[in-house]
Length: 150
Image (cartoon, rainbow, N blue to C red):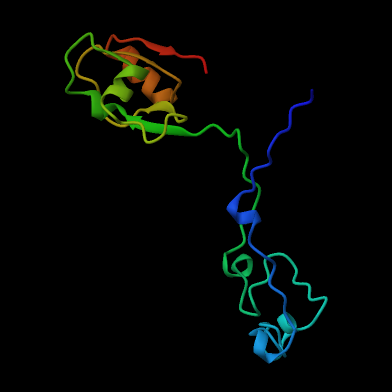
């Protein structure tokens, strides 16, 4: 014998539709809750998307973005040599040094060493990029400048 399933009605489905335009005593007579005039009171009203009632739309309030912004553009965070002059001899400066000391503003930034300042003793670097003057000063102090891929 086939089992019968009882359909359970959700309370939101039990709410009756509001019947408008059935006279003043029904509570929604005459203008049927639409107000008196304007586009909202007419039948067949249609507002385009992002229409904000006639005020200046948010899309037009915001400034235009000029130019083309390349999503995969490499962004370097630069550090000068004088920042590392006080470190002890033989220190290895790699990407983990910048992460541990919270020197990177974004994890996507690459690190570049610039040549402003002098090194007192040999310090080894292992980062993404160097300026020519930084390479020369690191080599002159006895340190190494290794390039990290990616």
